[in-house]
Length: 314
Image 1 (spheres, helix red, strand yellow):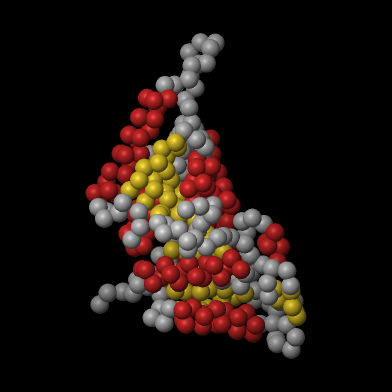
Image 2: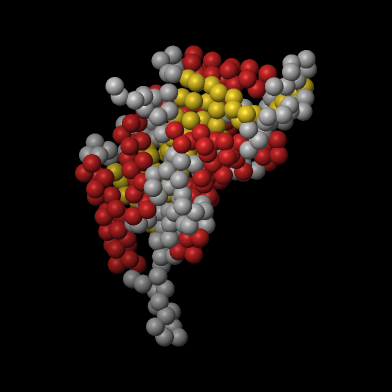
């Protein structure tokens, strides 16, 4: 008897972007044919008698005991999802814990993918990327999708955009992107950027040949994609090569995408970062959900970063 497929995990903090992550996770679970687990991490001690009902209007708990309200609100979210997706197995769990990030990282061990909103409640509301989302993205045991904006519903061809840097550690991100594109029946736009290699054989500066440089970089991108094109012949692939900043190019293309996929590692001076500068920046700036896939397909090793760039830029 085959074991049930791993579920899609959504960290539920009852904020607006958390609700977006719930909707993304539900759609993903339907595509994968697996269960959806909504997990809310509640402090083990009673909370102050205040709950944030929206971004700007806190309301009193009133006569409802604080420990019961998160359960009721989480169950209400689960009920909404069940009504929208009657065939989907939806599990709602309120887990005690004082460290939401650590708890969600542990919960991700049994998930196929984890989805989070980009911002949280309380002090985190003012942050572009909440500390919980950042910590889970860096340390989760599954690919993490951070949802700050819902994917556009007006663009007919919502492709999967993926960063390609020509390194072996980018292969898991490419695989994730191809699998997502096949599930969604859309194409892939593979983005490869580079910066000019300025050489100084003498006191003068000698820029590289831009035409030759682009040919070389297109060859790098094509080589990285070759095996995946053979494995996923039904996925339309477009290669986008540009002598530009990787962050700017990925953010620009994300405005017409259904999902942006990046690796957590790259090349150059950011190799000591846990989450690379490119990955971190697109999480803050992208116009669609962003998936971060680590070098082994799950969690980072903590010694590199970035995506979609070459020549020491990340």
